[in-house]
Length: 276
Ligand code: PDD
Image: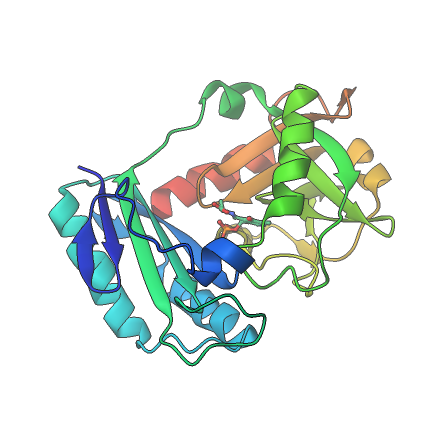
């Protein structure tokens, strides 16, 4: 059963509970996390909590909870939901106060939902996904997981309308990441991914993949690359909490590598699923 949480109360995710003066709604003044639950247990919770607290600190938002307290709320919600494979979203905003750009002196508002896992189309994993390269029009601090996702949404929608699964974003001639995923490529057998600068979200799945590559003895380079590197790669894949690892077999309608999901991608995906 899907379940919602708002500032200590258990609610229905569809309940109309937020006042118009809620700052997440009016300003996007908040941060969020998305965590996957496999077999009743939140995956890489420690890393998600670290990022959530770093994001909150970056926007000067006091969460008024410890990571352990938030984890306990999540565990309780998972148990109440009775779900074993599910999605947990949590949002923290600067609370409820009359509209004013200046920060109010009110407690942060924390909301969560636990819902059945929304599975993606598995044929993408078998056949590979298409991507479209688009300009990265976001602000400079993409490492903060804020609620302001408009440029991401616009890029994803544009990619979708062009028949692609994901938009791969390009800032100043450099590939940053997907609209809601990180990007990896394989070149001369080496795994390459953009470095964790402020221009990308430091993905939790990205951390897992880098760790798996080290474990499997695959060489890794965290370095910037231009769009041409995507077209010339042997393999390309995307990572995120929701899609895990998805091979990319075409970009802007150009075939990548053999046009089929590559061996390195498959090996990493299998190792990832073992961890899960
Ligand atoms: N988004 N980059 C961006 C811009 C993202 O929005 C996401 C995830 C990622 C991958 O991060 P992670 O591996 O921690 O999920 C990279 C999730 C899926 C979302 O917004 O729902």
